[in-house]
Image 1: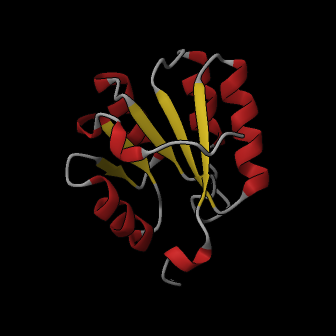
Image 2 (image 1 turned 135 degrees about the horizontal axis):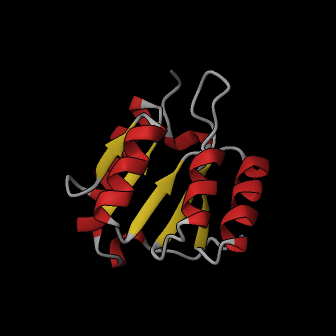
Image 3 (image 1 turned 45 degrees about the horizontal axis):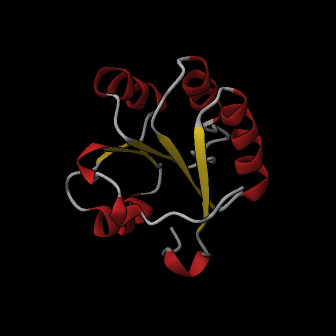
Length: 122
């Protein structure tokens, strides 16, 4: 898994973020600005990605309630998606599984390990 990405160097006019935590979304909004689109639902997220083909998609592995973003990774790999996928991880094992699926689909993947100190406890 690569961790060498600077989000600010990319075209943030076209960033789609799938994240279930309001607190983490607020943090990411501060990093990416209002040009990024945020989604709590994988279904709405994928509809947006298919329609707009953002340059970067950011995925959280664990979406709460036992739901993961693995189905989203599988769809991106099958499309195939030609932008960059950034997995912002609190679950390194899940991120590794998603990285393998995406890489097998020839998708460019970067995983960024966010420490718990970045996020407020819900």
